[in-house]
Image (cartoon, rainbow, N blue to C red):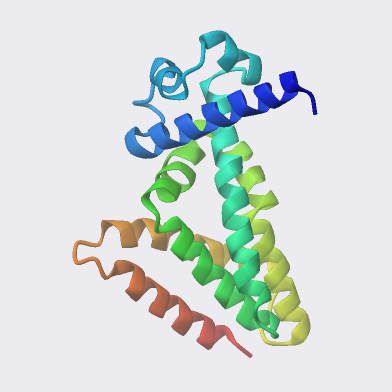
Amino acid sequence: MGVKADRALATRARLVAAARELFARDGYGATGTEAILAVAGVTRGALYHHFADKQALFAAVCEDLHGEMEGVIEADADAHASAFDGVVAGCLAFLDFLSRPEARRILILDAPSVLGWEAWNEMDRRHGFGLLVQGVSEAVAEGSLAGEPETLAVMINGALNYGVVWAAQDGDGEGLARLKTGFINMMDRLRM
């Protein structure tokens, strides 16, 4: 890569990092592009060279977070011999990742409304939900889960997504632990 290309990548990375920090702290709606430019230390021209608008920058932040989450889920799921145990471990890794205020705020609370349901759903399908469908399909094939894999994955995903929001609102700080215990119990009841 040339010097110019390296600088362009560095500028893009600064924009994404600054936006991620501000979106996590203040939310999408309260974060103005001027604040992003100030934190990133770049010009408005640099922003629009890399992104069509603030929403496109937000989508890039979501892609980065999804990529991080995907790596964590895969690592935990792949550490298990059975597909069923891999699904459970991957889902618990998902819960841990989304218990981080930054990830929960951006991916669960803001992304569906900012990106729109269709775009958010497509992004999720390429990342976390796609991994869940794959894992559930493998668990059905090994005989540890019964049913149509995508339907099972949708039901599990819905429980996890709502659970993350619920756990974050829990006043005693034990919400995530209770959610994880409840999820394990639910999966044990689904196991064949």
